[in-house]
Amino acid sequence: MDNAKGDLARRGRLRWRIFRLATLDTMTTSPSTSALPETPSTDGAESPANATLHALRERPGFLIRRLHQIHVALFAEECAGENVTPVQFSVLTALEEMDATEQTTLGQAVGLDRTNTADVLSRLQQRGLIRRRVAPNDRRRKVVVLTDVGRATLARIRDAAGRAHDRTVAALSEEDRKRFLDYLVTLVEANNDVGRAPLRLA
Image 1 (cartoon, rainbow, N blue to C red):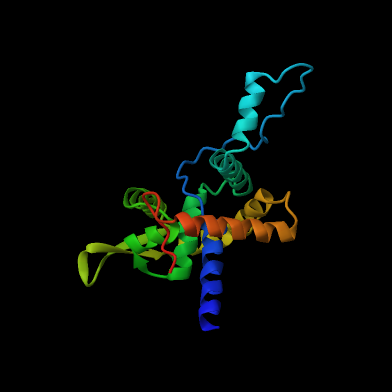
Image 2: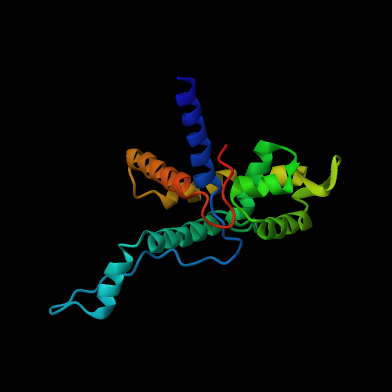
């Protein structure tokens, strides 16, 4: 029973990371929110272009990438004027929950490699949203802390970011949203070791 409860808690934490944190795009550009192009009707045989569209719609990677583009655009729309990207919001959110933490541990919590973690933190530090200091027990390591300005920024945009997440899955019923997130968790857990920056699942 304890193992089952622990597994549910772990999956709940992972679901939160995937949906509330989970975006690894450090760019600030805002892709179009338009849906996949409509397939034009034809009277004759299917055109090569239409056949390509049908093939792409059967590829999970293509659809996941497109949905990510849509979410980034919705996030930029909802959080307009704050100059915070989804991945920066993820880092700020993780810091609020973890409090002071080592830079490497923070990167693992949101699925960022060392290079991207350092880049994101440098941008946040320049704006006064986080502070970094040398770890007292190891001068090679850096500890990251959320500043008061960072906390205020996070509180200010939290609802707007939540609306972006809600709009991303607005076409699904409440039951389907939960099922969709469960499927995402299953896929991430099964393939977490693939890639440069696996999430720390424990």
